[in-house]
Length: 558
Ligand code: NOJ
Image 1 (tube, helix red, strand yellow):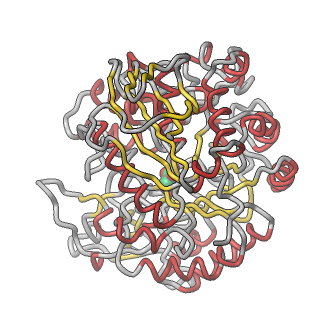
Image 2 (cartoon, rainbow, N blue to C red):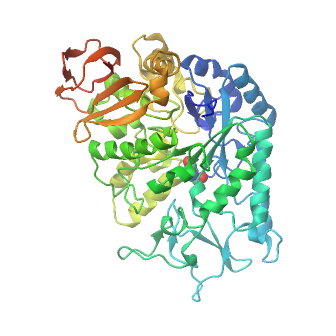
């Protein structure tokens, strides 16, 4: 089988607005990223996934593109972008860009023209529908950020569809001209020499249900748009055409944001013959989210649910070769807060989480700040939040009769701003992120949790991540970690996450204790070597092992 350049890669995600501010306007920028490339090289990463830096009014921090061929000036210029690609190359770091092609900004020239009149040549670049007879929205679809998915336009007396925010009108993928223009843009960037794309919201490009009302579950007026716009029949033709006209012509890495793809279809979507190389699945990070998507009505879940979600994907990756491994991104709260009880968040439990996902089959993604143990923030007022989704959820919660405290508590747990607080570089003012006023308040814990402190401490989380990366890329275990088969282990155990990886007769066992209690286990295997652990001494006696609180250990089996 042809090997791909990215098979042993570690990807690091940068959310540019919050990474490093080089000109002290309070907003992270491309020059700031360039100045931190040596830090990333030292960490050991190979690829940067850059959240969007295209020109944008920033209603959704760049996921609302107004010009795909230009760079947002808050972030810098096209020269800066070229310099980032070049400086990356010098360090063997490839840049993969975010590709936002389900929607544009309402300030994109296409939309401005589309909106100008019903007869505009660009009218069909977006999705316009007449009102119902009473003048109301064409149907009851609810947008992902809250409220109707339709926005009324007085000029033409029609509504346009926005699966996300009002300022993010959905492109009409049924129109071949739209697709052609998008492919041209994609190839423009690929010709520049970027390493590939993370493809945003791509499973929403096909709309279904004949644009009819969705059936409510209860008495609600609006119904989550997923029922009509997520993974709809016919989407595969679009995805195949997209690949054929763009990605297939280049030696790149593509990773698609792909919630809700049915397991039996995953091999169509990803892998050697799939539409993309890798997929971001969501089940394991959204265990607390119900189908209505309301953060303030969370679902209960257990470690068994987490294990089962991972196992399902891993078994597919055994078939297709690779998957995307992640615990955090810019849309998720910090993993420490999600997976560890607040009072138990510590260096030990952070290392345990890192081990748990780093030895799985796939390509690990690290989200900025994860490597130093950044945690959620608790802003005291809604005024402090910036995230469009958080503001939508807050409003919905109040309108459903929840108190302000309850609504805020949901944001403390789930807000996307938890991941977007400025990167904590050192213990100076504003965590060393900017000398200006940061666009989003820094997490007050930066005095203790920051890069500088992590670099100084040999035992730090950052240095632990470096070890994990070294083991993955440059050790006698590289092949089993990268290519080994995933084998389930202790599937029914409610507190221990275990799995085996196996390659050419070599086997490694990964065990993580997700509790603060000691747990005795009897292994059916002899142990050759301890590969890594988050404790200094391992309590291993023949085939008996005692896992201490939040202990994680990786063992080579005989
Ligand atoms: C997914 C992105 O990750 C998220 O940040 C964004 O708000 C939506 N897609 C819309 O582009």
